[in-house]
Length: 92
Image 1: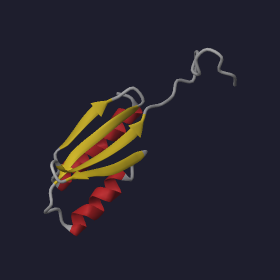
Image 2: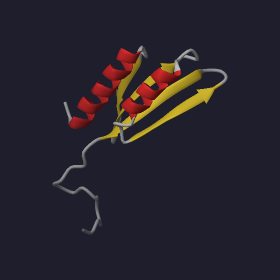
Image 3: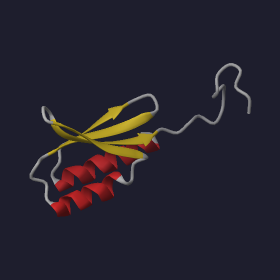
């Protein structure tokens, strides 16, 4: 498993330990973790959640009146160090 997957899995496991149901998803450039956040989450738990997602490269919260609150965190995948990384015309 790539380092991004290991980090994302660790984030998901820590969120689960707090009581959130986390799910992982692989994307081209990121591995993401998402979890629904209940309205009843305590202030102490929020502090723990913020400590956990701080391990990601990016994170945020989407809140809507229809779907509630979804926490997300994205861990960037490593960029290949060999080959045609930049594509045609890329100059180093």
